[in-house]
Image (cartoon, rainbow, N blue to C red; front, side, top):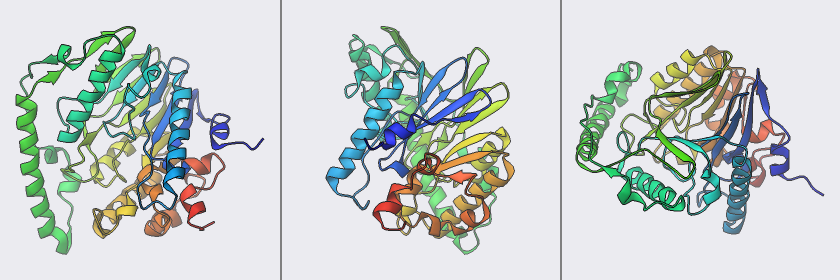
Length: 369
């Protein structure tokens, strides 16, 4: 019988010290996801268990996109049986699964998830509430109405104040346009803050063996294993309207694994510095969305993402970087980032598919290999 990608995946783990990392599903395998299972002697953590079918421009039939989406979904469900903890970095559907679609996914787990009340855009505010409403009902509760509370007092400073590298960058001729975009972004952000301060919040809860905690900027300990979550970080550019995400660092006996979530490169220099400062052994890094080059991604920000990835590869000390997700929706991804791929060894910088001994699907279907 021919071995499937799913079979290959579960026969091979990345092992660093006493940490094992299984690459459950990524875009290089043909469906949108960046899901991993991290196992230490203390705890098994399923990170971002979500999947979505590829965008219309991806060169496969709709039926094939759905088939791959279903294969990824089944892989996530299967591996979730091993997990003690599930983390959700943000509320895009390629990073979380609604409980109504897979009630067993969350049964008996501790959930460490993005705070649904602050540092969140409008669409993810709604999706987070749908997720928590469904979860509460699946577990036998009455849903969102039982979880709503009054908003807490909230002091918020301009997030750019925590991005000195990006804020001081010389953009040359693009500088005037960049300042205009930042001013527009700040107005958008200020409107969100008013919503966070005025609309009902959702509380953490425990029900039917499931525990739900908001993870932003917090650390959780399981024996000698630490799960450290970043403060909310922009999903891409400064004031990116896609919202905010959480980066996760898993540490055990001095070994570190970083899952960057959707930093899109990272495109922000300060986020690259954060990753470098962690001194990780393994980085799971999403690349820039080069399939949107010329639309929402311009040449300047593509270059920023490339330079930041090069710095991470050269200065972080990481033994391996899994570079995947948004990047692998475009058959030209290596051409767009030629400077990166020409300077970093292919044994250090690779897609999830390549780690598993496969060719990235986008290259197969586009006739590149």
